Image (cartoon, rainbow over all chains, first blue to last red; front, side, top):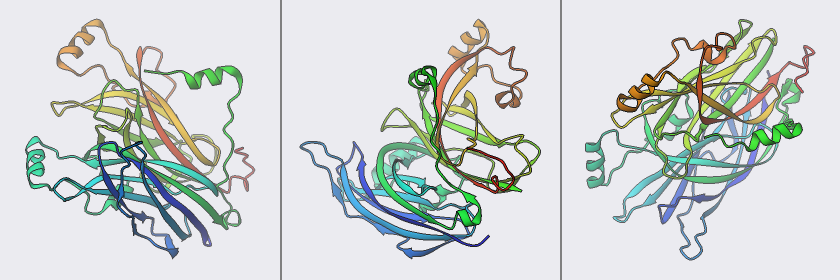
Length: 201
Length: 176
């Protein structure tokens, strides 16, 4: 298979973390061995965004993402990994959330909301010591999240969301006989519609 | 051979009666399908949400299959477990979903269920935990042998699948 290209322009727009006052965000990408970056920044770090207390607007980063990938195999499709940090009352840098998503596979404009979670101490004793020392559990390399294994031992707490927009362009997928087109979801009949709105508890 | 790339995420779960959930998942195919790369089973993290009512797992899936035919189209089966305050994990729900057959991005909701036992089982479940569970997991994703089972509804598991198909057109298979 010859190479195909995936180009993304977009931004890490806003975030919602109800419990915190200031947050900044790092991003990086994880991708398989058959992928390379041809242009753009692989890692970035945003400004510290503060909350607006008056009308409770979200944290706004408005942070640009601009990157192009060259791949020879869709397996190992690039994933965007976000890590959000903030300062606590003692001035310590504390992880406020980690999140990840795949870059959309189809060309077009995409909006994604990414859940952000932090790892938790596994025992009560560790919880107390981490509260005293101000060192809370965090991932040394958040790229481990992009792997499908090794996460079954972690306990996490989800405490926020980040909203990202992607504008995706692809090249040479069709000539490699790869079909990544987006098809409309068909739902016919009133029964389908009522099924969708059934709330199952 | 036609090829199918399944790229996605087990996003999370909603409407479950408990928090602290995790999920074991596995992909199944018929005998004509060959796994080329990727993991076909896994276990997610345990999430105790404080943001909203949704448990987030954000567990990536990236599977590459090659196939000679359509029969045995891949499906994913799920077993949701609850991690209780004593550190025990017990089965909370079962469910399965087929991988969509059209390329592109799909958000799939899998409604899950749990077997119910007799009144004594319910009584025991209330005081000591545990409950009836399936002895063989193939009941989750096979249609036969389900007729003697009584179940109750559990929550919904949310998944995102991004599908890329290769050479389906070349072999005359119309997927849309």
